[in-house]
Image (tube, rainbow, N blue to C red; front, side):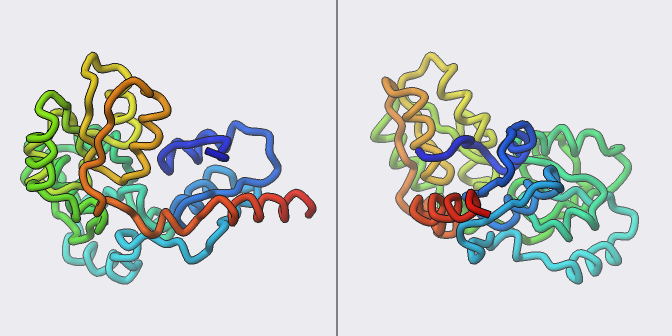
Length: 250
């Protein structure tokens, strides 16, 4: 609630490029700060907690990517933006959860794709495009993989008229039960624009807070208390506000 800009990693980086502030304080994990710095190379980008990393981004190293490229020398490397800057730099093209399908479709069908690091998002893109030549790197988001089909079934039994909104980082078993599959921003827009009055949100718990603020008269249901990213929660407001005050005097 103290932020000037709220959004996913790419949205925050893009919006940060438009503001006039001298310093950007990124309240998120490391790859988000790196992405903001790539788009804003002339501005200091600070993290309130430098220990806020992303387990999925850490599941692939530059050495491991090079080894995978050697095993699949003809493949186009498509990298999810939820990855480190060095992995992005060694890739052919990057995608977001919102445009992964479109990016995969842009690669010639006869060309194999090495999709890193998120196997679930790559699998979703393969399912949507019907491609059978996508090689999935075995990375995943622990938070989204803690969401199970049984959680969806239980919530649907409680709220039978609700739309189930699922992030593509979830497993296929969960995605199969979805009424809406989309990125964080797509899920938020769907909830705001839909005529439905209740939504079961199968992604990180913090997204529910944003939807409730935008849709105060709608019922927003968290899929499970297990869908909590401890790394994103390493940035409490006291750290971000304190870091901002320090920067303002530099």
